[in-house]
Image (cartoon, rainbow, N blue to C red; front, side, top):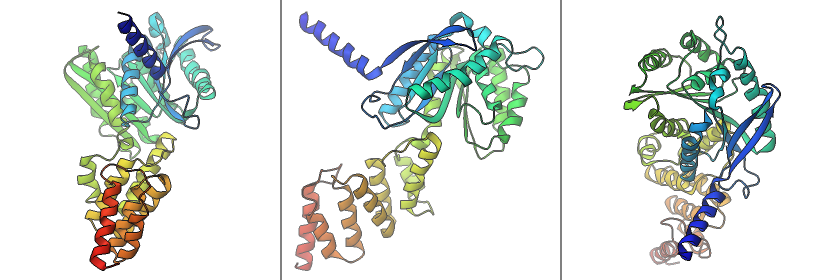
Length: 382
């Protein structure tokens, strides 16, 4: 029994150390009251002291926080999205007042106007000051709060970069306004809209109408995604929409997949080394974070360069890998392969031999490197 209790305690401590959930009471001058916040920091926030993180802002955090935070943690663990700070605003019975709009302009009115200012001029600056944040914010809302997120598209520049709209209860004229406004926004916007076949009828029809308008928006900077889940109700669609939205919005961040390798790397007109650099430049520009190139992406692009006989690209990839992962065999292996292919076997042999004290990576082992060196030595009689 003691062992079971000890194991349970260890698991709890381990989970708590990973999840880092923080509750805060935030006194708002704009609202004239205190609001309860729920914040999840990334798993390694305390140890990665130089790293900055995007913000995922969750309205209706009383019930949306856990599914959003759980998915953010899961996707970031597998590097399908950047680690992010999840900030939830507990609204409870205030959600209708928070999202109120003027009866004539249909823009935030009364307390809704104060709540709009609270998020933009108090909460986000506070989070930016207290935590290490990157300049990329995704908002998540459901019905009334989903509609409310859209108001930030009318700021210059918009407060949010990404909008996850789960069965939005649209204010009058919102559909037309969005279709007109979005092409005027120069920066990249990621917009996800979801409904379900068993959603509230009026909301489902409104979502379908909005989709009809947004899917035809002409803008290179507008990234739009839509789901109508078969059998999903007004409340169950969130469980399917949240992961879909995160996966689609952050698709460029993901490691190079088999599909990307086959359909893009093996066919692109861009030199493969440049494709790799461009991919990480887009990640830096979009999400405001600078990461080392993943080992997976080095191997994928180097393999593609070999298959397409782009030897200069292979040299550039190897040089970059050697710089970013100097303790591993990654750079030396592909640099050796480069010299093999351009007809300088002696250089290749010395590079393979010189990597005997490096760390192995994936299929690139020390034995493989030394075997290649021995084969060159035998073939050329060095």
